[in-house]
Structure formats: C-alpha cells, structure tokens
Length: 248
Figure 1: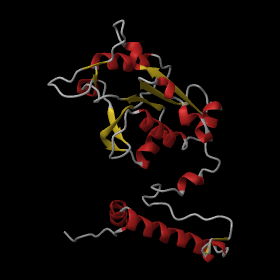
Figure 2: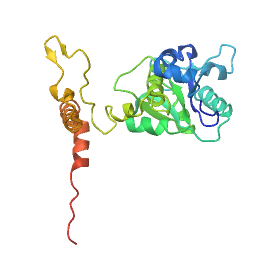
Figure 3: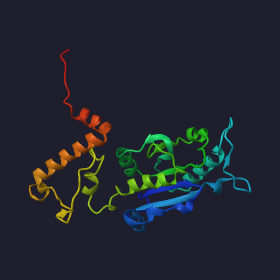
Figure 4: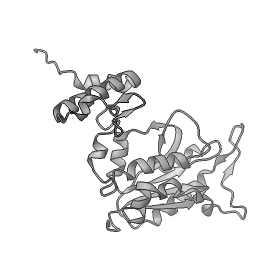
C-alpha cells in the first residue's frame, strides 16, 4: 500500500457526488481503490452555496438559454477542496469541457506521474469564465461531442490515469504496447481458438519467432494508424524522418 503522503488522489467537484465511484469502483480501478493505491473524493459543489436554497447557478449575462454555474460558488468549492488537502505538492486543476484541449495519452502519463488532480465537472450551459481564469483551470476534452455534464468525462480521465499507477496493472508491459503509447494505434490481438468461423490466427504469431512477431506487430500498427488516424501517422512520419543538415 502506498503511503498517505504519496498516494495519487482525485478530488472531483460535482453537483452529483453520488455518481462516484461508479465504474471506478470495479475492475482494476476499483481493486486499486480498495487496496489504497489511489484515493477518490467527490465533493458537492452545493456545499459552498450561501443561500438556503443552495443555489449554484444563474441566468447567462447577455441573455440566452440555460443556466451558468456561478463564479463565487465554484471558486469557494475549489478553495475548500484545496484547504482540505494535507499534501504540499501543487496539483493540476482540471475542468472537463468540450472546448478544452483533447486529452492525450502523453497528458495522461504526465497526470499519472503527479500527485493527482482536482477535477471540476460542469453542468448546464457551463461555468462563469472568470473562475476559469481566477483559479487557473485547465480545460480538458475527451472528444468532439457534448455530454450532459463533466462527470462521465472525469471518470474516463481518472481511469486512464489510475491504470498507469504502480501496482495497478499486473504487467507494466501491458501499458507500453497499447494504442498511442508510441504514437501508433495498437496492433491486432488474437487468442484461442486457433480458428474462428473460418478465420485462423495469423501463422506468424504461432511461429515462435519473436523477432518476426515483433516486426509483424510493428507493421500492423503502422498500417492501422495510417488508415484510421492519418493525423497521428503524419506526426509519426515526421518523427521518423531523418534530420538534414546544411552547410553554412
């Protein structure tokens, strides 16, 4: 079990704390949570409201549909969550938002290597822009689509981080041969039975020749990436291109 001083901690600010741990309480993440390899706290933003109705939102300035989370209430919730921590290290403050920068495996690795994260889950039409600036929130997106709130996106981010923590996955190599770990999509996987509906396992994978298996997997990963994610392939191709020098 990791020491309390170094454990990776996720603090989630949400209007629906009962949604957690949800899927994070089962499988790898759930077992690691129960074992104390990481910690999760879901805090209700409404606890920082100041009126008897526990109001957290108001109408958009300038008009328009929906409601917006108030800057003063959310800022108070963020400050309260930070004040409750016993760790001296500064942790990222994230806001799950469809307008944020896309979450990448490299960013997940950075987050997993740190002390954890405070994650804000928006609702309604979003949150007051001033609290994003005032509290230095990093906006993060998990895709080009809109969810009802940030909770599901937060779960995806946390799961991606937790599985990389030491002791969570049985074999650390499992995390090294996955999609995006080397800038490529993962190669195809096969297992028993030897033949399924007339489709056999590629013969090279049962040859016992590890060098040929590695070469096949590399070629398949490159072909899949080129076909399905040309954006990733372009980046990978530039990285592989030999550097040229010019005479001065």
